[in-house]
Image 1 (cartoon, protein in one colour):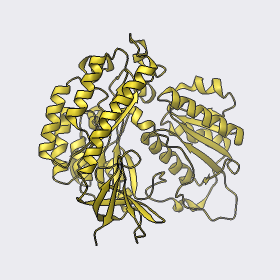
Image 2 (cartoon, helix red, strand yellow; image 1 turned 180 degrees about the vertical axis):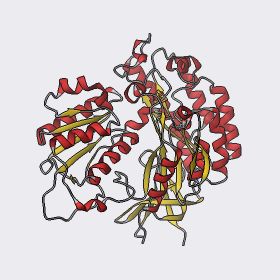
Image 3 (tube, helix red, strand yellow; image 1 turned 90 degrees about the horizontal axis):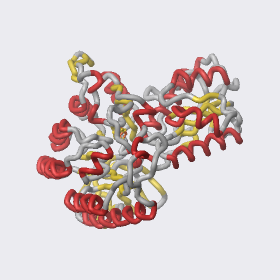
Amino acid sequence: MAGVPALLSPLAHFLPLEVPRLIRANPQPAIGFVSLGCPKATVDSEYILTQLRAEGYAISPTYADADLVIVNTCGFIDAAVAESLEAIGEALAENGQVVVTGCLGARAELVWQAHPKVSAVTGPQDFTAVMAAVHALAPAPHDPFLSLLPPQGVKLTPKHYAYLKISEGCNHRCTFCIIPSLRGDLVSRPIGTVLDEAHRLVAAGVRELLVIAQDTSAYGLDLRYRTDIWRGQPLRTDIETLARQLGELPAWVRLHYVYPYPQVDRLIPLMAEGHILPYLDMPLQHASPPILKAMRRPAAAERLLQRLAGWREICPELTLRSTFIVGFPGETEADFMTLLDFLREARLDRVGAFAYSPVAGAAANALPDPIPATLREERLARFMAVQAEISREKLAARVGQRLIVLVDEVEEGRVVARTAADAPEIDGKVIIPGEWELDPGDFIEVDITRSGPHDLLGVPVA
Ligand code: SF4
């Protein structure tokens, strides 16, 4: 599921990050890599980097030292397309040999039009085509150093957390989204393959698994929830079984991009029992039935409020994150007020909101009554003001609590950590002032002493 606008926060890396260094006498082809877009694109980048390293390529931290540069693009909204085209242009100017992949690669004509000198354009997840282009431009070295590849593959995230992609594509057809046309219908990974990867990641030091897909709750639907045998036990390919199995690992397990299907109800007891984190990232997009209908999204806000209440009864610790789009075509003031009422009643913990922005190729572009840009922005500001107050109150309620946090960064004069209620990159932090003998990936207990608009302040329990 892509309440996708939430995923467009810039996530651009020029590599390498944490890539083990090859020590060798002979030069070897070096590949530069620019990774743009959402966590799902990050996982694709990790696959490609892992394959490059498996074949003995070096990863170059600079354009100048690279034999060629791969740009993994995002093509979700026009701003992301512009950013991707700019990154391709920069790589061409600085290096000259550029292979384009990712979501924008599905619209190859756009890339060729803007940059006729790129060497190859491949679509999202077409790893074979990416590697074929790399082999043609910079033949692979024959190298005995392949064992330097870490068993968990090459990761773009810090060592202590990792994205675990369980499926690709989406069977929904939300009118504002072009992901299905870029990435196709739902294709779930076999449950044993996902669990093997999760075990490898945890064995390599990962302390938090972030489960992602375009629509996490649909996992297994395309496989008709078939039963596979993994390590001698029969496992049904569905999100509940997967969550239960992941919950056996000594790591936090956090679910992202959950579409509000009925089966989500069955995940809440797993959270209450401590198998997985009591955290649900569920992009809802709107609350007014006519707008949800125009978006082609489930339109039962009333029932959803009841479900939220029921979930909180079962699991009082539950953190709910969501994203919304304001100013969708046809949104009246009454629709918008319905959304604000929902927000006040639902009291979600973390909320991202975006003013609607047309995406080339999206069905919503043909809808009547577009909202003027100034009104879209005005509604966004009103929406955020309501949520800011709710968030402030929710965070203030944490002061005085004793919480377990996961250390993300140890800096001079402070430690940056997160509670179970906060996902990396998108939610808040717990700042622990002072010098402490801690490392990223450590779990510690802290007493929360103060709250701000987004973050908390804490002191470690002695
Ligand atoms: S079409 Fe699929 S990926 Fe796009 S917003 Fe809807 S659920 Fe998410």
